[in-house]
Length: 551
Image (tube, rainbow, N blue to C red; front, side, top):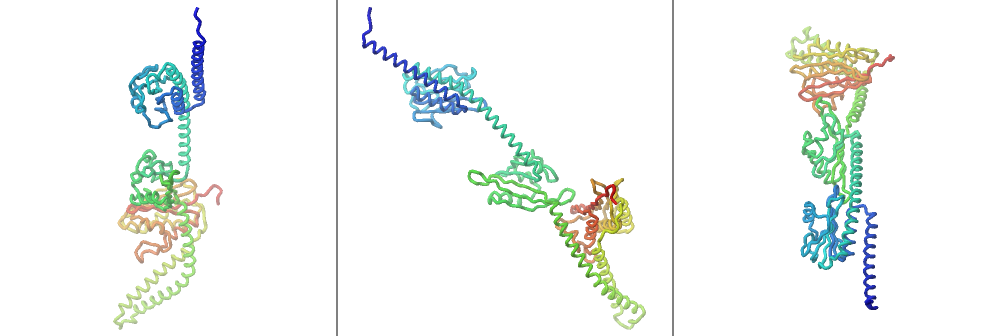
């Protein structure tokens, strides 16, 4: 019986110890890789750790991880000796093509070829498919300098690491997709919340980018006469959407905002289809990038300030009316006495002419003509001073509950008997069952007649004059509508001012509408106007309706 020599025994023991140590280190490698992947929740990090670990353990020249994951896309990580590379030797188009053609689900090597990797000086590649739920989703490609380096131990290590990677990347992919879904859901909720805030703001708001494309359009920008639906506006060029506005002015405003980066506030006016004027305060607010401070978007905010502007105008008109009233009260009496003396002297001279006192004068006819002019102009001045006196004394007299329809019918009847203008058609539209209004009937009728007289003067070629009365809410409306020349935009804010008139000299004092305004204001009401040049004008008087129990 042969027994091994001591030298043979030592060599054998050394070989067994070496193999045992190698196996222990391989198991330790797999265990440590598994623990490190246990808490790795992102597919990219899984790819990076696995590729780096395999490269170091099997002493390869390069190792690439590539996987096509549902909901995420292509995940890659490539390592060479010396560290990770962003854009290395991996032939991605080759890998993607390989994935489409049902690759084998077991590892295999490509001998003497650079199938998936280039430029690393290798002579053999080992491809270990990543199988997730029975479907090949990618591979780990390991490149060796010499074919002899790819032995059975290294193959088993790569396969074991691949299986760990497949399980980890599957779990991390599910986490990533869930995280992305959660983020997208949160973003969508945030977008809806932001959109709800913008829609709730009591202003018109929209945002354009540097290409002048609309990216935001809130609900208030959709409503009203100037409104445009959001679906039509979003994504389109702002100059195409706002084609009703002066293109040069709008473009200049946006270019200035992008160029200067300063907030700009602009007052604008628009005229609705019914002729009413709306006043807007438009603010251009530049948005800057956090990275470089460049203006990337411009927010346009439009606030309807019509009520504020009308209130300011009303205060100004009231102040002017009060000042003119005080002036008129003090001046009229001083003027009336001289006018009465002038008129009386003129009449006395006319009487003497009629008696023949100036028969021998060659200028008797001229004297008679001049006296007639003096008398007529004196009486015209007397009419003006009388209007001024009436204007200065505007006070609501005895108020009693009355039917506004009866007041309008009476005014229309008086106008019809005045025979003013030719070709004027009178129409009345009185809503039945109107609530009563507590007014001085004579003064309200005076205001309606003054409006109707102006309307007739605005229709020298004839037209349609309509008296309309109806109730809405707690107010009663009286409207006088004509189909005349209309009022120009520049005159709209001045029509209630004392002495403002567009009539020829001698045909109007400019006090009629001022008197109307004073009468309506004294009754706690309002008077407004809508007008379109060439189509006509509508004056509206709003009076508060009496409530049950009001005296």
